[in-house]
Amino acid sequence: MSNMSFADAAYQILKNVGNPLSVNEITSLSLKQGLISTNGKTPFATMGARLYVDVKRKGVESKFVKVNRGRFALRECSQAPTTSASAFRPSTFKGAAYMVLQGENRPLRIDDITSIALKRGLLRTAGKTPNATMGAQLYTDIKTKKEKSIFVQLAKNRFGLREWGLEVIEDEINKAESEKVLPATERKRSIVGDPINFEGLIYGPLNENGVIFLFSKVHDKLGINIEAIQPGFPDAKGRRKVRKGWEDIWIEFEFKSSQFKVHGHDPKGCDAIICWEHDWKDCPIEVIELKSKIEELKTD
Image 1 (cartoon, rainbow, N blue to C red):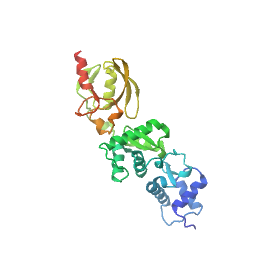
Image 2: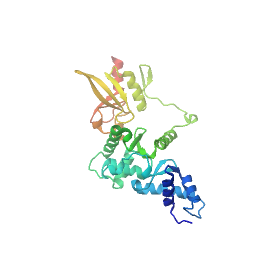
Image 3: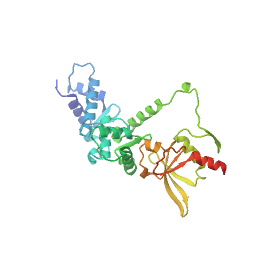
Image 4: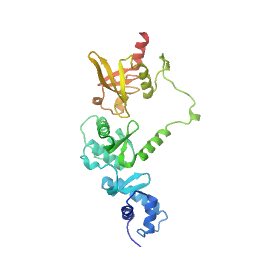
C-alpha cells in the first residue's frame, strides 16, 4: 500500500480527473486506487480536514481551491479569476483584505476585515479612518472591475472572494439574514415610528428602508430626481435643480446620519446623506433630514 499523504493523493486524483470533486469522491478514489491507507474510521473527514487546512494556511500558495461547499479543484486548473493577492502589494488595503478573507474563508464586514488585517500585521496605516479607506477600496474595485474583481459584495457591508463560488457565499449570507427574522408566532408587538400623517403615511420610518420609501414620496418636493439605485456605496445617483440646470448628486440613505460613519463610508465618495434624523454634529457633507423637511412641507 502507498504511504502517500492525503494531500498528495488528492492532488493526483484531481490532476487525473481534471474536474472539481467532492471530498467523498476524492477519498473514495484515493482508497480504491490504493493511494492512501488508514486505520482511521473517518477517512472522509480526515481528507476534508487536510484540504481545508491546506487552503486556509497556505492561501494562494495552496495547490487546492475550494470551488463550492465540500468541493475542491486544483488551483492550476481552476477557472477562478486570475487576479490574486499577488496582484496587490501585501501592505495595500486590497492585498490585506484578500489575505484576511482567504484565511477566514467566510464573508466578513468591512470593519472586521480591517481589524483582523491590522491585528495580524497585514496592514499598516497612519490614517485615522482605516475602515472607511478599506470600504472605499473594495467598493471601487468591484465597481470598476465588475466580474473581473476578485471580491464580491454580499448584503450592504459584507464581502467575500469570487473564487469561493457565488452559490456558497449567497447561501451563507441568506442563512445569516434569515436567522435574524423572528417566527411569526414570536412577533407579539408591532413597533412603529412617530406619527407624521403625511402623504398617506401614518408613521415615520424606523430604518433605512423606511427612509428610502418616504423619500420616494417627497423627492419631487425636495427638487431631487433619482436616476439609479445600486447595491454598493453610495446607494443612489440623482439630479438636483440648481440655478444653471440639473447637477448630479450621489446619495447615501441612512436612518440616522451618524450611521454613515458607523458603516465606514468615505465622505469623499458621496455628496449628501438623506436620513430621518440628523444626529452627527460634525458631519463633513450635506445632510437632508426628512424629519424636519416633512414638518416644513406640512406647514406650506
